[in-house]
Image (cartoon, rainbow, N blue to C red; front, top):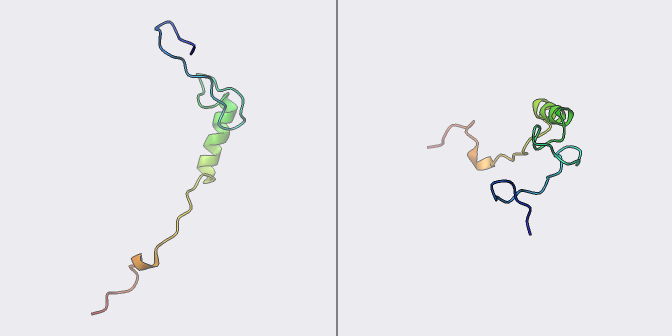
Length: 67
């Protein structure tokens, strides 16, 4: 049986901190502490989280159209 809160709604199981893996707290969700939240913010600001992109050579607009 799933745990329930006072409103008889199912309670999600505790999730792991996105940085260190410790149980996340409600205050800093999805992190366990302000420190882990700050580590994540620093990674965003430094550009560590980036999606690699490959440009399609057909979409090169630097050459004028031939005609």
